[in-house]
Image (cartoon, rainbow, N blue to C red; front, side, top):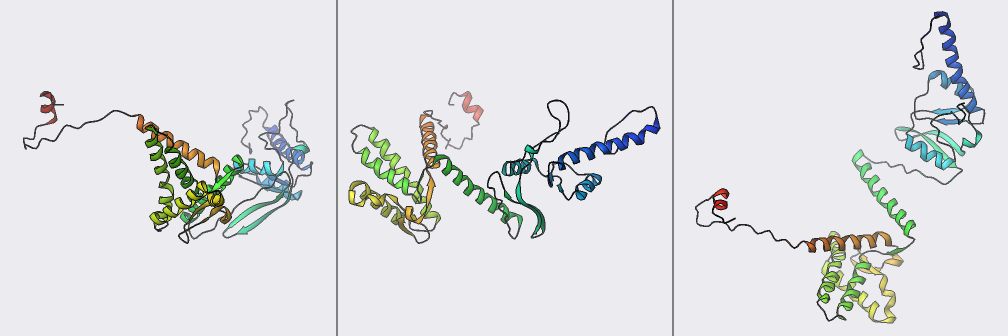
Length: 309
């Protein structure tokens, strides 16, 4: 059969009737969908020319070979249902008007060299697409990764509902606080805390080096500002000071809008600490056999046999 169905019949004269009925079933399904007022149908498979004829006659648009991931996003934005079959719980086929979504406009537009189907003004929830254009695929791939990272940052901010100043501000403030805290202890823990405080300065130093700035000078100024903010109440506003890597100075990063999600910062500190603790827990020492300088050139097997390994 035309739709790929195999039928075993005894009377060849009934074959045309079966073919006609097959087409009628498809037509009934399309009419069932269009009867609810639908004028745009998107499906993951192909659309036969005969089926497309029914849509064209009804003044509806049928879009074929849409990715399932895109269909789910469109259904979520427009309030439509993502259907794998028209069969209901009673074993019959039905299509309810509640399964239909709504959008202000669905149009086919040409952008650069591609023809795109644009769905504008979805009613269920706001949605937007970002179209990237560049000189080649590598450039577009890099832009896509950058935008993905930026969107993930926004996602983390919305999840935690907290942000902190960026540009090495948090690390410098923590370093100063831990150094002062370490001096309050009289045990050997003081050394561990002091080293932890020192290691936190790697972040602002690396930022400055990557920006081709004087890391020593910038980090010294950053530490001085944060020390004043923690020791002098009149300088409490200096706690937002971080690095400005464009100008090579320190500035109030809260006013400048250089912010980071607090959740990511906390997780980074936790994971780095756990990694350091894991390494310090390894107390085994691997000792290599000293090199034989006599020039004898004994093999590993000879040394092992002699009991030297």
